[in-house]
Image (spheres, rainbow, N blue to C red):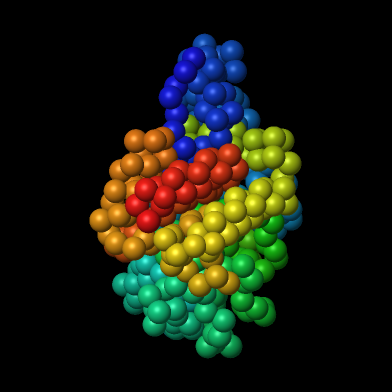
Amino acid sequence: MEYNRIYNFNPGPAVLPVEVLEEVRDNFMNFNSSGMSITEISHRSKLFEAVLDDAISRTKRLLNLGPEYHVIFVQGGASMQFCMIPMNLLGEGRKADYINTGIWATKAIQEAKNLGKNVNVAATSEDRNFCYIPRQFNLSDDADYVYITTNNTIKGTQWHNFPDTGKIPLIADMCSDILSRPLPIDKFGLVYAGAQKNIGPAGVTMVIIRDDMLKKVDEKLPTMLKYTTYVKNNSMHNTPPCFGIYMVALTLKWLEEKIGGLGQMETINKKKASILYDFMDSGSFYRGTADKDSRSLMNVTFRMPTEELEKEFVKTALENGFGGLAGHKSVGGCRASIYNAMPIKGVEELIKFMKEFEEKKG
């Protein structure tokens, strides 16, 4: 069957592996010979329990998580974590360090402040419009945690080396680069990611949390806003986003069995980013917006000589089968999001189109 699919460079919800979409299609009406769709089975059934356990087990294997780490699935989107983290983990009269590398970190800082929490902005790249990752930090000796956003989808920057926080746990928003590369997980007390960038559809957020962080949770918090609720009930205190978790499990299966794990995924992601950045750097028509040592492997942001050309580029690209190339509305320009599921061929074909567009308009 011909689906006339385009190369999808959307920043999120984003491209998913074709193999995953095909498996969902083939089994949607009769999941695992149950006579029901995955969207119809009980979340308390052994059928769904197996799906949930598979998603958790694959995450643990891919990231080499020890028994001290718990994988939970939370609703409310990644933005819910902006408040859940300080509510659960920042003690009364205590402080937390935040490193501001763009709009998502800015929002997290504001949410913590809205709760009346003591926030120290230990570093920021706002002075140059968030086009780089800071290298110098004013970290506190007594912070409850240090918070970073590992990848900036809007500005196209990414942490390639994580800050040394000593004994203070590192917390990370990994929405747009989760499971795109191996992770030194022992540095982190908590990481989270909305699924829709790299590991599944919108509607479910993965949270990985360590035992010592759970001990900080105030049990007087509302039930659905406590991490302990999700850990104690294996993410099933209430009905979880079953379909989203199912698709996450299939995407992790693809990543583990088809790709071969995070080391191989990183190699592929580096190749995609390298050929695209190298092409842009070879001329002056396409200009990358992020400092070279801070460039993202996930979101390649660039400008062209005029805004009119950028609009024409995005329109013409879509007409030729390349979607989602407009920059974020807050900054304009162009952006190619090349998450895990974007094949190398998709980037190569995009470069061919970019060359043709430059020849006509440059």
